[in-house]
Amino acid sequence: MHPATREGHSVEATTHDEADAPTEEPKPSAGRRALGWLTEGVLILVGAIIIATLLRTFVGQMFVIPSTSMENTLQVNDRVLVAKFGGFQRGDVVVFEDPGNWLAPSPPVTNKFQIALEFIGVLPNSGTEHLIKRVIGMPGDHVRLDDEGRIEVNGVQLEESAYLFAEDGIQVAPATVPFDIVVPKDRIFVMGDHRNASNDSRCRLGNVGRNPGEDAFVPVDKVVGAAVAIVSPLDRLSTFTVPPTFKDVPEPTEPAPDKPDLIHVESGC
Image (cartoon, rainbow, N blue to C red; front, side, top):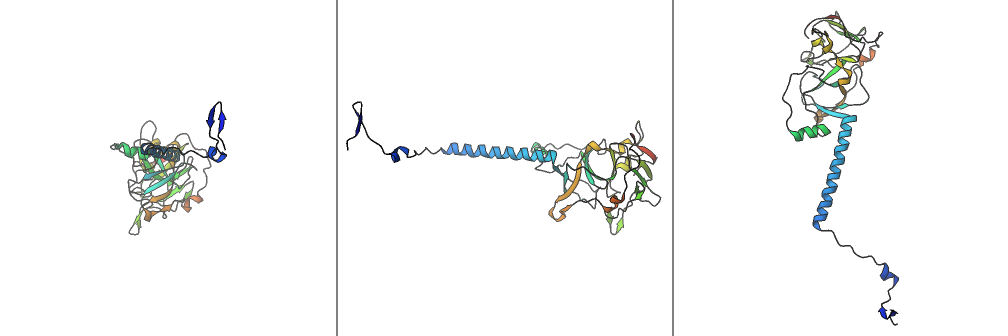
């Protein structure tokens, strides 16, 4: 067979198979491959940081327990997961921002890498600007230490033996300084489970000043959320539930006052 000709030039005829055969692309250099892997790794890291930040902001956050004020419910260095959704109720253990001079000043964390990891939620929050206590009174609740030395909420005496600190079979008293108050609007009354080691709402009821006793109540908007579980150490893995005694407490019969109703208070805890 003679080759086809066009305008005096010979052109070799090709088959369809030859025309459609794929051409092999040149392999990327080692440098380009490394750049691709690096880019992919950065994108994965950025995505993980964004997801972690969103989870920390809207879903939950971990905190490290720094003190003995919630023993034996919580131990020093427990890692606690706090939910930022679903609200909270009487009997819940909640984390809240210091409402004002509850905590002594402490040196700030200066390790920027640690600060960044805590901010995005990779590490639990180790800052000292938060506290963790149990909610005893909600807005409008009438809370008092009764004549038997027991805490009473809206006329119901709390059975606190399930969570109050005890050592060698001896349980701490629910409180020792008498008080009788009504929790104001948009605030809560909190106490630690280790009443002898907790600096809580009781300790500020006797504060005097322009707004007597107001510092004793935590603003609702300062509450980060309710603790849902101890996630570390592994031998302390557990979840939180509201103690049964709080389920017997009725809702208040009167609207919460704008300011604390201090029926009877004394200085001290």
